[in-house]
Image (cartoon, rainbow, N blue to C red; front, side, top):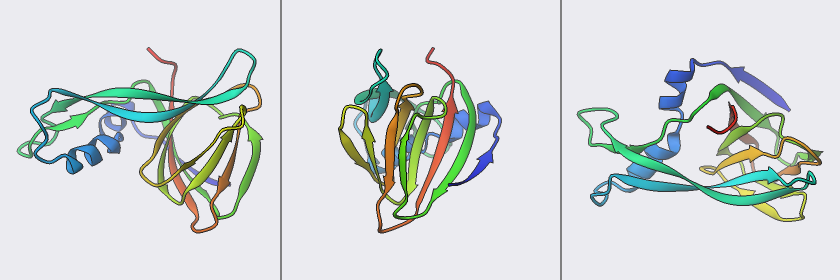
Length: 162
């Protein structure tokens, strides 16, 4: 796997990296008068026996004057951002069982991947997906890049939850 590590100041990165909020705002132009919204995402975690699983979680987004004079958009700063890494994996690549190297977000930019966790469940993540990887111990998961296109993701390392 080829990887390029990009170090960005935490404050600037936290405010600018959650591209999902921009995507949601663009899709919801003329959105209802709500001050908060939830963004749903998948997460991978391990249980007390080291077996990884998929779960679902949400992040609350709040309307903010992010880029005046543009209308308010739904945003959420990522907390405890440590670094960002752009990864490239050729199409068809299979990575056998491995835990996540750290607690990190995966923002899929190009090429779909199939991920299988320790309990046997598999999911396909396509461009536009956001996944929080928390399976940092135990057997971890497998990753298979689907054969149609090379895979590119931004991996955003984050500290423990607040």
